[in-house]
Image (tube, rainbow, N blue to C red):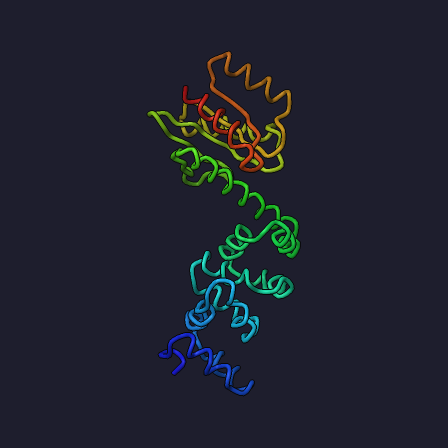
Length: 239
């Protein structure tokens, strides 16, 4: 009966059930059915519905819908409850949540992961942010098949620039990675993008490479405030 009832009416019916009966009904619902109920309210008002269900039901619902929809729903949970279930969520939902939440809540959730996993997530978020920045310049961004993490390419004007985006680097790792990517992509130029200031020796190395006819540049990009230098660095490799 719950499955055939409009979500808001179904929630009212569930609210009127004794606790033991509510638990039995919730257990019998599929993840998709649970998600339909939890997503029924307007954004900003779903917390009341989520409070009705135990953690395992919330996790089941979050696994049954698109990662972005699940993230929008789960972001309305209180911080302590979200922290409690975070590890149980699918990877795609965790990533979407981390991209959605403000920085202080994001750091709180990353603290629930072991350091290696947390660093992997931070790296993926950085590469995704770099990709978004490049696309803000109307660049056609691609990811080579079977490429290592952080390797991208931009194509324009019948040219291709290989890109290595590295978090926590000053170019000493990113530049060799970009050069290697340029070699196996057979691209005409390479660009290293890092969140730390580029080391002086890396700048000298890139300048020397350009003098020898190898288009190579390293640039710092930490957030959208660095879009200008990134856009100029990319444009210089297509000129």
